[in-house]
Structure formats: C-alpha cells, structure tokens
Length: 154
Length: 149
Image 1: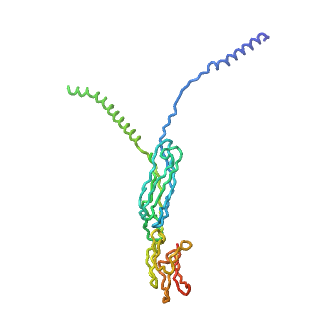
Image 2: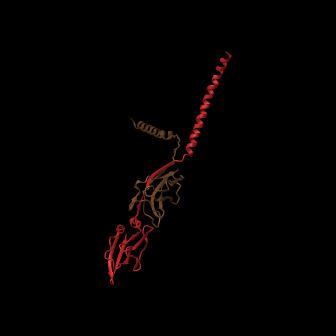
Image 3: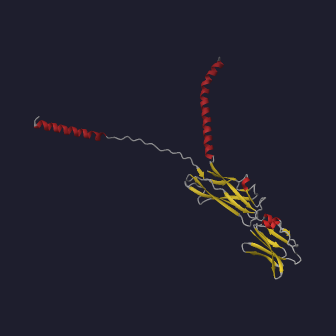
C-alpha cells in the first residue's frame, strides 16, 4: 500500500467515524406523557385516654373538691369537631355524692390542626354534701356509673 | 292471533324498559348512599373512670353529740363541715380553746365531792387523738379533755 492509498484509507475511516458519531445526536427525540396523583383523604380524629379522675372528699366539707385529667385530640387539619363526655352531671351511686364534669378546650379547639390539641376534664364535687358511708372512709369501687366516655364527633 | 302478534310486538319495548328502570333504581341508591355518607358524623371515643374517696373522720364522735359525764357535765359537740365547729358545756372554769395542731381543749371544775371520774365515754376515744386528765390547780380539781385529728 503506497502513501496515497494510506491517506485515502485514513480519510475514509475518519469520514465514516464522523458519520457514525453524528447519527445518534441527529435522531434524539422525546415522548411526553403526563399523569395525576389522585389522593382521597378520609378525615378522622383520634383521642387519647384520659387518666382516671380521682376525688378525695370529706363529708360536709366547706369547699368544693376538684379533680382534673388531661387528654389530647388530634384531627385532620381544618376538620371541625366537637368533644363531649357522658354522665357529666350525676350522683355517684356508691357514695352518694353529686358531681359534675366539664371539658376545657384549648385555644383553637374544635378545629383540627393535624397535631394534638390538649384538653382536660375538670370535675367538681360541690361542698356541703354528706354522702353515704357506713365507716370512716368509703371508696366508690362498686359504683356502676363511674365509667365515663369521652367522644369526639367530626 | 292478532292478540299474539300484539304480545310479540310489545316484547322489545319491555326489554328496553327494564334497563332504564334498573338504572334509575341504581342511580337513586347511589345518590342515597352519597347523601347518607356526607351527613354521617363519625365518632371516636375513649373511656375513663371517676374514683371518689369519701372520708367521714368525725362521724363517730359527732354522731354522739351529747355526752353526760360521771358528775353531770354535758358536752355538746357540733360538727357540720367535717370538723368540730362548736362546743358547748360548762365553760365557766375554762372556755374551749384551740391549741397547737388544731387540738381542742376543754376543762371543767370537778366538784370536790366526786371521788371517781367514772368511765370515759367511748365515743371520745374514736377521735385520732383524745385524752382526759384530771389536774389540780390551786387546790381545785379540773377535768381536761383534749381532742384533735
């Protein structure tokens, strides 16, 4: 192979390589397809269990007895809800003391924030009640109306 | 024959009617379900107990409000708030007084003719702290009662 032939071969090789290299860039293309992310959120609330409300009362005491127990409510952000407690004004059927329960709501309570909101149950036994007790101390263990339910409605 | 032909003609008509009716029923049911689900208030709940401890510390003492001592002394103890709020008796010698620790002390003059104090009333012993003692001051005997709880 003489020099001229070698030059032609080299030139042909370079030209071919250039063509091969140029082909992919010339043929690059995109196909676009779109889709949505659909989410269905079912609103819900959860409520923590309050600790038991414990009163110590002396018969005929001159001042009301009070007790409190905190609990939290967590609802979907923006979801309106109400909180209630059962048996909020009853007379304990074991020791014969009337008491009332009330729920104290935090600022902004009643509308979910997505985070827990701290509530409390506040109980009061009015003063001056004699109660029912055959010994020096009685506990309402046998009371059938001591169980209460906190309900969140949304 | 005419009647039979009429029946045959009416068949396709009924075949069209059933799907329409079914669709209406299904639509109504769906609408009813949607309405019901939108108006239903969901609830979540939890439970707790209310415990009450009722103390009647002065019950036994206050239940027997009038006691007669061995020499005729009458002491009335009045309880209306879970604590003794009033005493009455012969306080000519010493008045009822509140001492340290909310103890109540009462003393009365014992006639010289009385040799024995007799039995101490059992109700007095039911207070957490109670004591009787005979003291002699300036040649006179006094009976002192102290109650506290």
